[in-house]
Image (tube, rainbow, N blue to C red):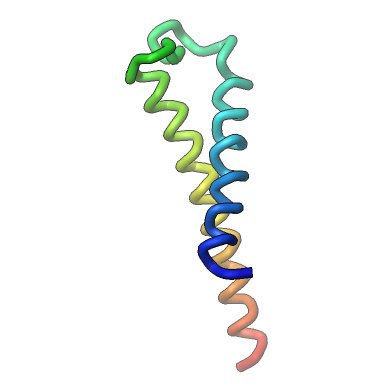
Length: 74
């Protein structure tokens, strides 16, 4: 599988997962952090923040796996 296809597939997992986490917390969020339809607001930023956290976790896991493979071959 090419890197481009793999990258797109990874984003197809990261974005819905981040959105899912945001909407799991949605009922308990204060009104200011709830996303309003067709607006860029604090809810949008918080949702994007959850996606970035999930992305960071994916990148950290990939980095640790890559480094673990390099240290075992030395």
